[in-house]
Structure formats: structure tokens, C-alpha cells
Length: 280
Image (cartoon, rainbow, N blue to C red; front, side, top):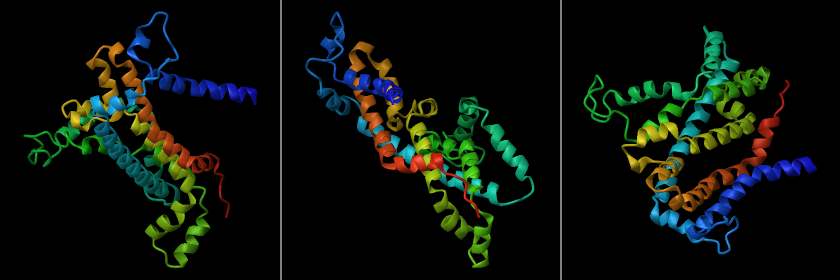
């Protein structure tokens, strides 16, 4: 019990330090010796985040992108996982091996090819049929969302959970006249709901904090920047001492949505991690 208490305190410590840092004044930062706990907390830093920074726009962009990517990945991962787990078709084995192999390559290796595909997308953003003349899909939400709509890890995870669904249960539904789509939606998805929630939390947290790709495609369109990108670029806009408390206040605000999501879905998350196999 003592070990768990210490481990929990060590886990919370960085977040506590971030909150305390967001309440420091410039005088606290410049004082020698340094002041760790501010004598007069600067709660005004949280107001300044929305007044001096486009924090509201960043939050809206983050919510739009993150929710869209999460929904897309849940849909594609569940559908592909169900197909790999419950259907046999030519090339099933090799396709699944390709899915496993694709997980070995980090996304940044495909950064330039994906950027070029979106840049020269035909008949989009002023492009002609051959993909020339405009900016393609760059400059809009599609450029941020589309590269993350399919997750190899999500497909693998959903397949493993779909394997726990008894085939006899699906066959009984077919005998009763249920369509394949109806079996997927009405039987398979409800049975793996904890797994879907678990994957959804993973995707939401990852996408909410994603920086590299979003910063790449929004450099020319600041209005599409998300919270982590905006905070990262804030470091280069002013000296660190000028914006340190403001950055930490923005970070505190950025953590709130993911914290709320986890607290609301915690029971499903725990069930998803401990979900056992179903036996027919």
C-alpha cells in the first residue's frame, strides 16, 4: 500500500508542479532564491490565456480534429477487426501480417509522402485532374484528419477482441435472418464496448497531444492550429521567462478535456483492460 501511495504521488507530482507554475508571477520567476510556492497566486494567468492567446480557437480546432479522428479510427478499426476475426477470404493471412508489419514503422517516416499526396490531390483546393495548380487538401481540417483515420494498432486490437465473440452466436443470428451488417452493429459492437472505449481513450489522448504532423500542415494556416501546436510555437514567440507561467496555464487548460474524458469513461476503460474471453 505504501509503495502504491508513493508511486501515485510521483505520478501526480509533474501535474502539481505544472499547476503551481501556472500561478507564479514574473516577480516569483525572477526572485533569487527562487520562489516555488507563490505567496500571491496569479489566477489572472488563466484569463490572460484566453485574452492574449487564441486559446478558444485552439480548443475548438483540437476538439474538431480529435473527435473526428477518434470516430474514424473506431469505425475503421472495428470493421476491419471484425472482418479479420470472423471472415475467411483470399489473402487474409498476408493482409493481417501486413497490418502487423505496418506497426513497426513510425508515422514520421511517412511524413513527406503523405504531405505530397494531400498536396497533389486531384480536383481539390484548386488542383486540376492531374493534381496541379492549387494546394490540394492542405489548408483545411481534412489535411489534419485524413492521415489518422486508420490505425494499424487499432485494427489489431479490435481483431483480438472480436475473436472472443463465439461463432455460434453469430451463426444463430444468421439463421434468424440477420444481415452481416446487422450482426456487426447489433451483436459484435455491444459485446466489445469496453474495448471500443479503451481504444477511443487511447486515440483521443494521442491525437489531442499530436504535434509533428499538425504543425507541419498548419504553419501556413495559423487558424487551424491546435492547443499543443499553439503552446509549442508560443515558446519561440517570446522569451521563455515572459511566457513561462502563461505556457503552464495553457497546459493546465489543455489537460482538462482528457482528464474529464478519462474520469467519465474510467469504468469502461478498466473493463476493457480486463475483458476476458467469451465462451460459447
